[in-house]
Length: 234
Image (tube, rainbow, N blue to C red; front, side, top):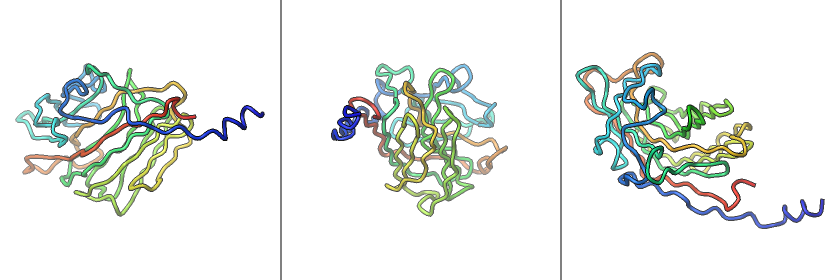
């Protein structure tokens, strides 16, 4: 009992940055290929997406994630993942991710920051669809919890600041410095996963596909950083 009291009285260790995204870095990120897609891509029709992943650096490497239509009806889309990169960075239990994102305007755009490993381990930092202009989708697919969060700060073309703590017993989301969802489920003690940042394109079943005259979709990630304590989340 005394030892437990001492632990409570110890100052909480400070989190330090362990990953700062440089989207132009080939050692941090692999472009245009992800094992979250069947056979690593380039298409994912089972998820009602029009994606055709491309390694073209102009679709992701500057932090602006783009999609443009192809003659075959798919869209060339930007995706970056840490899986398979030289650094092979993974977020893990107790880490905190912070990101600054400019939301897309065009219908059919489906931006996301999420995690993936070995066929699952997915936490959605956010997903967004402009046809639901004030709504963010926040999801824990490791232990199945989610929230559709409506907020006046969320709108097409807006800059938003996101923060997620991948807690052992609860994953917690903040928007603009305000806590908006604590799922009470968490990721468990030994969870880890790779990062994915991408722009998908809706095929029309759940959200509208792009307008026929649309020639480009885009969204921007200006900052992405991960912090960690020396011992994870206590």
